[in-house]
Structures are given as structure tokens and as C-alpha cells.
Image: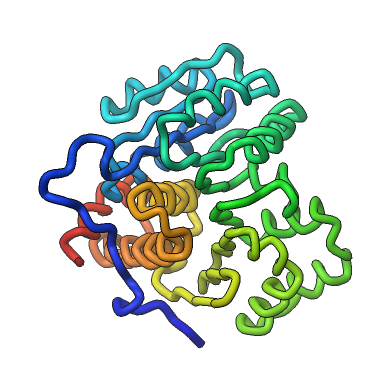
Amino acid sequence: MNFITKLQIKLPDRRKDSHKGDNGMVLAVGGSRDFAGAIALAGLAALRSGCDLVKVIAPEKVAWAINTYSPDLITMKLKGDYFNLNHSDIIKKSMERFDVLLIGNGIGLSKSTRQFCKKTIKIIKKLKVIDADAIKSISMNDVKNSIITPHSKELEYFLINSKINKNIIKKISNTKNIQKKSQLIKKITQKFLNKSNIILLKGKIDIIISKNKIFYNKTGNAGMTKGGTGDVLAGLCAGFLAQSKDLLQSAINAAYFNGMIGDILLKKKKGFTFLASDMVGEIKRIRAYS
């Protein structure tokens, strides 16, 4: 198995004479009346990865909460508790000055939100990281130039939306052998992967699938089943991607370091008491590691 090691890690270069914006900017779109913390964790993780700026677009109450939580995140406040179709044009216009769209964290699954996610992901041609409920809102035909970061259930939704045979989806879900599972996924998503897309399937062993290669990541531990750790992973993907513009390398870096940070905290906290917010604070170790 092609396990990720330090040899596969390549952090984005940073010129000594660079100016604000030269190291990438992320537009993070998410949050809802029900979930305010997810998009904040994702945005801060993106910033901690080394990109220069993260702007969060969220429903107004979420955005105000984020402002009180962190002065480092810029916010745009939208009226209402959830995203709807009318917001897609706002995202498209805002993306003109950003490198990467991060979408889905805490966004919810209302009908209007699902429609918003589908339309927005289709009309944004720039690089994207798609996570959480946004994955449940789209099919393979909707996506180009993206990293999707599903757990197993989100992958099922994605495949159902893509009209993959239910027996094949069930076979994938029931396959315990990690190599066989990854090969099955690669086979049925090849057209999707051919459109410059990457699948980062989260699990005990993360699976990263590209057009031509499959990588496996074994950093991490059982403490990372807590809410928010996947948001940190998505934020790392977006932050690395904004800096490097390399989809596969960004997914590799993010999976490896997300798990490594969890392993550091397991020892530091002497057990499974660490939180996703603790992980954001430990991302600083990435640059020390390099």
C-alpha cells in the first residue's frame, strides 16, 4: 500500500519578498442557524496552514458569532438563517479576488441550501474544496477542479446523487479491505477524477484518490471522531491549495498533518480529551515539522 510518509510531503514555498495575497486567499462559505462553529474551524485551519487571508461568507448570526470568536477572519453577513439560490451570484462575484472556494462546513441540508450548493459549485470554475453537506447536494457531473472530503456516509450520498447502482454502492460500503474499496471507488468515479478532481475519503485509514494514483494515510487516532476534526481537515486542504494550486499535493499534506496533529494532542492531553479547536492551535507545528 502506498502510505504517505514525510517523503510525500511538500509544503508550499513562500518567497521572502512576498506581499499580502501572494500566498493564497480562501473564500469560505458555510454555516447555518444550526451550525456556527464548523466554518470558523475550517477558516482558521486554512489561515494556520499559511495562506494570507480567509473571508467567511455566512448567514448574519453565524458571521457575527465568528467575529466575536476570532479577529483574524473577515466576514460577509447574509440575511437569513440559511443560504438560498439568490446567494450564488454573491459568491460568484466575491470569488473574483480569491484563489479557492471552501464550501459546505455547517451549511445544512434545507432544500434551498442544497440548491444553492449545487448551483454555486457548478458556476465557480476556480479551485474548490467541498465538504460536509455540500457533498450531499451534488453529483459527479457538477464538479471540476475540486477536492471533495467525504466520510463514508457522505460518499454514499454523493454516489446516489450520481445515479450509481445501489448494489455497487452497497458493495463499496461493505468492503473491509481498504485496497479493494479504494479500487472500487476509483473505477466508478474515473470520469469524475478525470475532470481534475480528488477524493479524500476520511476514515481510520484515509484514502486519497486521484486520476492516476491512490495514497493511504494512517496518521490519526480514535479521538478524531469528534465533531469539527473534519472541518479542520477541509480548511487545511483549502489553505494548502490556495498557496500551491496543486490539488493532489494539498490533499496529501492535509490528511497527513491533520492526523499528525491529532496524534500529538493524544499524547499532550494524555487521552481522548482534545477538541477540534485544540487542533487548530497545534497547526503551527506544521512549519516546524518542515
